[in-house]
Amino acid sequence: MKIACLAGDGIGPEIMAEALKVLDVLAIEGLELGHADVGGTAYHKHGHPLPPETLALCQASDAVLFGAVGDPTCDALERHLRPEQAILGLRQALTLFANLRPATMFAGLEDLSALRPEVARQIDLLIVRELNGDVYFGEKAIRTLPDGRRQGYDFMSYAEDEVRRIAHVAFRAAQGRKKTLCSVDKANVLETSQLWRDVVIEVSAEYPDVALSHMYVDNAAMQLVRNPGQFDVVVTGNLFGDILSDQASMCVGSIGLLASASLGEKQTQYGTLGLYEPIHGSAPDIAGQGKANPMAMILSLAMLLRHSLGLEAQAARVEAAVAQALADGIKGADLGGSHGTAAIGDAVASRL
Image 1 (cartoon, rainbow, N blue to C red):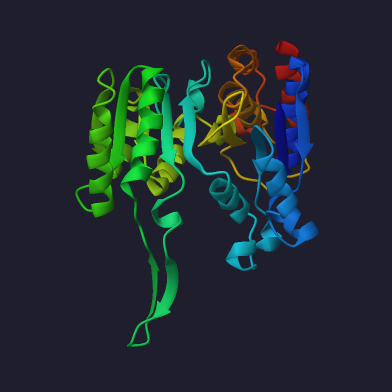
Image 2 (image 1 turned 120 degrees about the horizontal axis):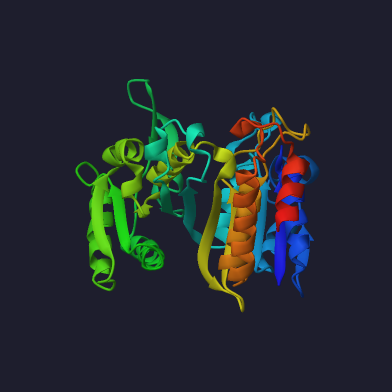
């Protein structure tokens, strides 16, 4: 079993160290780790945020464990050289089209949510976000109109096969949960969304055991605050999924607890090739200070064990150890606590 470990920028190396500490406790036989530079760190060393050797390591691995990218010193670079382009490059090269972002309210943390505790404790949902289409990958530019005004444009589109494959991922995820799926779009305004809705309905015929509903994205944003407990699995496009998953993270109290998996079609002998990362950024303002909460990184490791290595028992153990640490009052500054990065990693490892 081969894992490519890309720590990246900012707090990435710190939280990666704690995830690997937890992985070491599991003592998985036959596990091989590879390390490479990515993001701003890679640009400063190699002249590109995703060097060929980093990409080659990922392509030869069964899974990628990813820290974070983002470096203020790279803000003035051309877009294709900025650290964040490494993520887009990996998604395309590894054909990672399905982003799974779970949001669960951990017991005892309800008061940290911006929602009322009785509302927050109902949150247990999974957002399935399409990654390879939409405005992020469409034609884009800034042009000058005949009258001299500047105009920016971004082309939004989805082909039916792109919608179909993400719909299958979402329906299968729903089958393993509460068998309800909500598809989020803006079909009352966008033709792209109308195609999305039509194809999702077509795919639903193959999953008669899953109850399908539809919701416009503006209503979905409101309902995530008003009644988040109504959602189980949500499937949506790239742009809407980016926004709603971050909103869901704050509904549970902290972005420092949210993990994610980006999966593709490639199957290894153990599971599905995927990239796993916390959804927070590189937080350069606290980098190197030992203040970062590594729990999202550790929970991302759990998702890696489950989806790419087929180690469900070990994944469940890691998740239970995180939940127990939180129940025992082990909290970082983002949760109102005073525990540092290494102390949190030690606490999870000891409970594991």
